Image 1 (tube, rainbow, N blue to C red):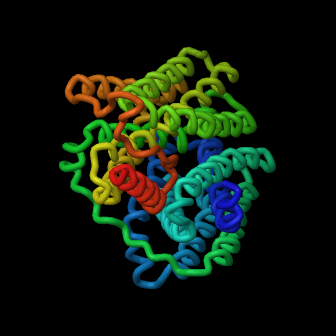
Image 2 (cartoon, rainbow, N blue to C red):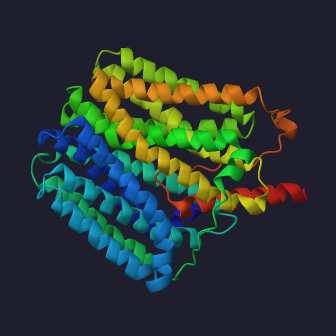
Image 3 (cartoon, rainbow, N blue to C red):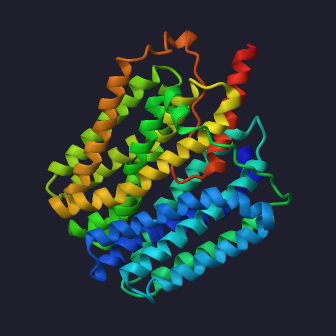
Amino acid sequence: MLQVLGSTWALMLGMFLLMVGNGLQGSLIGVRGSIEGFSTTELSIITSGYFVGFLFGSRLTPWMIGRVGHVRVFAALGSFISAVLILYPTITEPWAWILLRVIFGFSFSGVYVTAESWLNSSSTNETRGQTLSLYMIVQMSGIVASQGLLNVADPGGFVLFIIPSVLVSLAFAPILLAATTTPTFEAAEPMGLVKLFKVSPTGMVGMFLLGFVFAAQFGMASVYGTQAGLSVSEIGLFVSITFMGGLIFQFPIGYCSDRMDRRVLILLTCLGGGAAGLLGWLGGGSLQVILVSGFLMGGMSNPLYSLLIAYTNDYLDPGKMASASGSLLFVNGLGAISGPIVAGWAMTAFGPEGFWAFLMVVMLLLAGYVIFRITRRVSNYASEDDYDAVSYAPVLATGTAVAVEAAQEFYAENAEAEEEV
């Protein structure tokens, strides 16, 4: 790990600053929107706008890179991000924020694709797994660190919008200076959705429902915190501890993933998430209960993303893993677009506790579907000694097609190595 850090520290530093900037604005939008008097429904649509832009950005960025190159795309989209961040407090209208969030999501997706392309090109077959683990830690750390910045200025002013703009601009320097070669990236042609469903119904349905959960956590947590009466510092702590849970649980769940029936582990993870949602729902708005529930929900939902990808790959030939990643990302993106809107409806109908009720229902729905699939398909797990499964690689839902395809390369290389043995 230290060797990987030594060769990629500049790129990782740039990605860390990007995550701090994105994490700060994600929480700030919910807090500032509430100050401006936006309704929960309006804030949920504004949140969904980010994921609409992110989905289209991940699709179109490879085409833009092919036309004008990585550096120009990186610089242009970075300029859009800075402009959007400055415009938020200038045009405080829901319709304007929806448009700005779409542009922001599109631009950030493109910046991630470009930066992750350079990061992926700097890793080798031997170091790709460690690079992915380090990248996941950097992403989580950036989001956690960003929440502390919510307290440095009044969210009703301009300063907290200027800070992420500066951080994103500063992120360009280490990334561009460390990128000595121009990477090649061509997104694999996505596998058809019908074909993917036939290969792994659990993987496809799970990624769709998980999109609901992650988008609600990432986009609506600050809205929930405001409605629940939390202070700005408490909202930052709540968001931070949610992602800390994801970081802490990632590795033990990954360890178990390579040593037991993955469907059983997916089921247990979903039930754990459902229990966390139930705890938050019944907690009566207690800060201690909210923090525990957030920690457990993040700890269950974040590793589930990698777990579902690994499970899907168990039923794919190595040559088809990359094409499956595009379809998995697409269905996850559809869920992410819908998640904040449904969560917003639940919060409007049932009050702040609707946030936890929504997360609980989605996690239990996935658990129920996994139980159904267990009754329909014989597991490929017999024992730890002869478990024919690809190795688990940590990937976060904040990653783009580049990060997921890098993980797929790691899966494919390990699967081919196992076949040779």
